[in-house]
Amino acid sequence: MHTFKFTRPADSSAAVAAAAQAKTAQQGADARFIAGGTTLLDLMKLNVETPARILDINRLPLDKIEAAPDGGLKIGATVRNSDLAHHPTVQRDYAVLSQALLSGASAQLRNMATTAGNLLQRTRCMYFRDTAMPCNKRAPGTGCAAITGSNRMLAVLGTSEQCIATNPSDMCVAMAALEATIHVQGARAARAIPFSDLHLLPGNTPNRETLLEPGDLITHVTLPPPVAGSRQVYLKLRDRASYEFALASAAVIVTVAGGKVTRARVALGGVGTKPWRSPEAEAALVGQDASAASFRKAAEAAMRDAKPQSENGFKIELAKRCLAHALQTAVTSSLAGS
Ligand SMILES: Cc1cc2nc3c(=O)[nH]c(=O)nc-3n(C[C@H](O)[C@H](O)[C@H](O)COP(=O)(O)OP(=O)(O)OC[C@H]3O[C@@H](n4cnc5c(N)ncnc54)[C@H](O)[C@@H]3O)c2cc1C
Ligand code: SF4
Image (cartoon, rainbow, N blue to C red; front, side, top):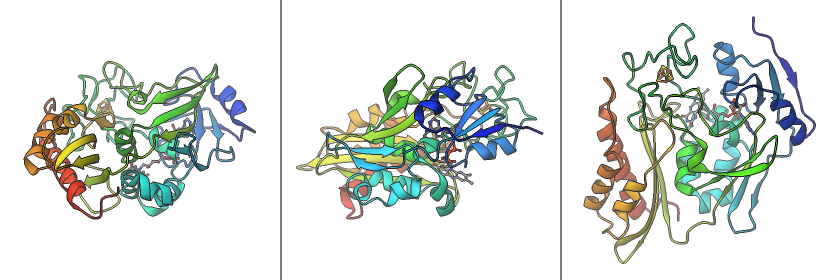
């Protein structure tokens, strides 16, 4: 049976110092922070994660949602997903984030899951979670069972010969579109990581999923000030209406003036190996009519480099329709946040 030592560090510095003893980075490391536990404990029960040391960060003062000095928002690492989704400022100014959070998991899970834990949740690829199967992400060099196996849920963007696993987070898709910044206290210094740099493409090292180094503690996330007049929508398509991961999802933040799109931020979920910001779709939208034809063109641009596997080719058209529909909803619906 797997045994581990459980401690509650007195403050962030003690937590960082203890975690910095790990030989590898956060994910798969032998010393691990635990927040809500909804990813880590599941994977420990499956023997996919076997940390020797667990550091409980729930008592650290990282659970506040506050106005940032620049007019944006500061979200503590241990803020629960449900508290973030229902916060009045988030619902008013960052509606895409609230919608994405509420589309994820179940009410019970959202009550436990935290901001940082959600950022670092791991793929739901079935072979990753089964220690009897080859998986380059879990056991580097063993191969990828999904490429010749069951890959219906897996990625079509950002894949490599080594791994085609999807990043499963909904919250991250909204944060990609919102251009969040991740703040980290490390063993040497504190630093700020632009959201688009946090997650790595699998390439030849799918076991390395983020930029984080041993000891790195995510302390908070900041969002830039809201963009006046923007419309925001998160649309998630999945096999059943709740308690299911995305087959395809889209987070859109658009501003329209005089019938033309003047600003667009677009990210996709369920189709990429990381939360997938699409500068191609954004460029295709800006300056164009806010029309169904433009939205379809933007969706084509977003999926231009998609590479289907044996079972997931349907995701390419699904993602295009998801994005086009999200854009249409954003510009026409009174439900879209502004
Ligand atoms: C049945 C089920 C269904 C789900 N459905 C969805 C869904 O539809 N959409 C979706 O987006 N998600 C879904 N999830 C995933 C869920 O959102 C994540 O499990 C959750 O967000 C993880 O947060 P946590 O606080 O519980 O993380 P934990 O399990 O505590 O930690 C996860 C990882 O983050 C690290 N970590 C935690 N905090 C920090 C920190 N401050 N600094 C550095 N590292 C840290 C841990 O060491 C660990 O590696 C589902 C989960 C389950 C079990
Ligand atoms: S897709 Fe990635 S996570 Fe899934 S089996 Fe292949 S290497 Fe492992």
